Length: 533
Image 1: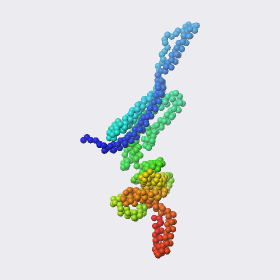
Image 2: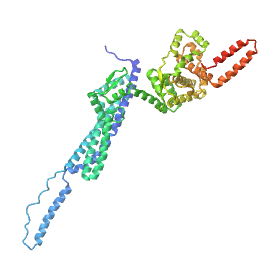
Image 3: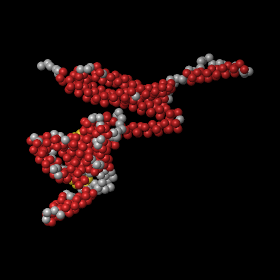
Image 4: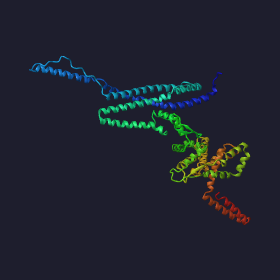
């Protein structure tokens, strides 16, 4: 049955065109940059044409030879004329011809090296021009056709053809031609200077040898150490040969051992994704690098919005636990349950009873079930490794989010309430995630209680709880608010004021109609409630 997509599928093919264009540009742009630098090796031509003169008879040498012959004949004639003795016979045979020319072996070697270098260089230049033409024609389809479906089909058609005919491999061979050309030129240069002067030759050969050893190292480095950034055009071929012969093994996400791909870029990707302790450390260092390179409030806001989603499994919790380690590994690290996670059930238990009953009474049944599913008391508590002092990275992150919290105190500086709301929510959710899962102290974020109150008033938390909307945000905001209030309740100054209030209340009750026993019982109950939980 013959058919086709209609216009309603344009969104799909527009997305394909966007992604394929980004993919092709990322793959082809390096090839174009490599091709642009090919023609610099045309300078080798001048050396070749200068050295090829040594392969044929020099006109100057011929002229000197015949001048010497003429000088000999003239000398004999002069002797015949001026001599009193019997005349000297003048030879009637002409002078011997110029002896056959045999170029030195060194000149032959030098010119062989340099002419081969010239051949490889010009071949690379020709291939570079062809590759640029192929790339230009290949990428032109994105500008030539406006119809997403037609553009997608033509691109896929040409893409499969380029892969089948190994166009990427042919393009990568161009730098290899240049490398061979340069190697041959250096060998010829060393031979040439060594024949001119031994000292000059040695001074030339030494840096050439060092350069050659460096080239060999950069060729083998990524094969032996896949994380090495150094590579040459021959590294991929050596990688392919080794992987075909014995191969390097890695474990995939399912824990199965598999052979690393024969393509070096693909193999490096597979090794970087292997689940190891080294990858865990790299993930942590990546987060530190991200924090170090974010400077603007808008960038920190984007980071804060992304933090809650990073606590999505055991691996992510272990990575954040790594960030909580000491900067120097001098202090012993002890494995224990996160203190913040241990206090979550108690924190939720402090939610006022009227708030809970109001929520239960006015919420739909499915919303109530949803809230129970979000109960943090039922969340799996992972074992994290903590130390006596937290790593500076975590404290710096908390401080940056705390400063972002401070910007939410003045809503007037924002262009709209929606922008303020988005930043405030990002701060609340990031703070709750770090406090609950990364074992950080709420005090590291600064004084956020007032800002939490403003956010609660703006969002209408009681209404959100009763309607069952945004329960994840409601739970996080509630936990942070209760923990911030608990910090105040546990303060020394609050206890002192509470003690004075109890004493005054105790004195007032003594002068009332209550008995001393009842008065003392009430005062003791109040005093107990003010003590640490």
